[in-house]
Length: 398
Length: 87
View 1 (cartoon, rainbow over the protein chains, first blue to last red):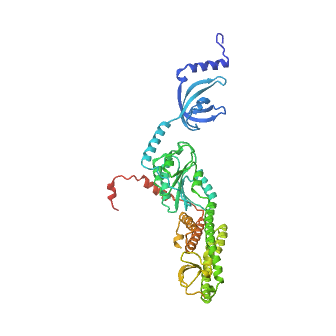
View 2: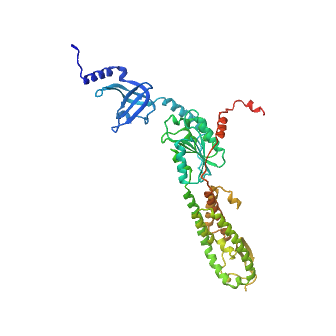
View 3: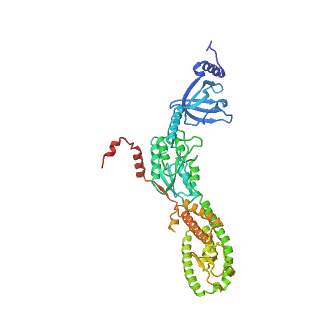
């Protein structure tokens, strides 16, 4: 050992670091590999490894460079990193100090994406913006039979509308065969007349996983769908070609299900509200007329043709009974809320009042004549009764 | 009656809305009002039936049907000459 310098550990690391720092190539180098062990420290620095099948190198990217990244790095991405190589003296660890990173091949892929988007857009494939059906008879779903997307769609739709019908067209949603399977699934769903809307998509995944939704084949099938299509390619930020071709884009399968499936309770209360409104109007309009009827009933003009009226009344009562029975049977099927309201409405119906044998007399202007003093011989009047109305002339006032 | 029972939900609901709208007009004669009311009730009943008519079906398109669609998609039309060939 005589004559040889003895280094401290710190000196050795410094020395080696200096050699690396002096190498022009290592001062500015591009390295491509797969991202792994990606971590964003609370300080804002990024720590990760770049790896090949046989080798790995630790990397760090400081906050100032990390802030300039145009994308969110994730494990498994193929990237090209720019930086310098040095040694972290404390650990004696050789690492890559990255100051830039981009997704490998992104430039080319993205260029192809834009070209296809432009071409299909010019063809009018992205012009679909049809409204979704209020109440689809069947919701078609084109997705993987085993993915989370199907589970999410079923869960959400069943919660909103327990009875809703779903028709699944299973297809692969990643890999080489996926584009044609997605297209086949959409086309197949279109052959079912009851299928009123289609959800096509998958849960989240890497850019590569989603690439089948950037295919021309899938886009054409979606654009030519007979019924509206909602795309749900589980990615919040990136739009796919399928998203453009669809009538509506949802960020996730669950969100698509929310859009496509109506809320059962809401539909029921909408119908109820209209029924009640119709009832209110009818009651209001008939109120005055019915007051007039009471007066007429008390007058001798109404008590005279007792017999004829009795016969008519019996016949009407039979009809009303039958109609009532038919209506009740029909409403048995309706749910409890609907049923209670319906029966109340039936009982109050102005039609039902007339069917009990009452008639309303109107003058030529359509005003109700509620008193015998409103009649005189030869006056033209209109009789409104169950089933319609008739014109009449007053012969004589008794 | 058949006119109502054949309607899709959207159509029946839209008609019901239209009827209530018409009923709101003071110029509707009384007999017309009653007819509108009765049709409205039939439409509301029909909507209720459609809402209750769901069976919570979860069905799957057969592999055969999907294969047929795939085949149709991969059949890139070549020459028009082929179309003349009869069976």
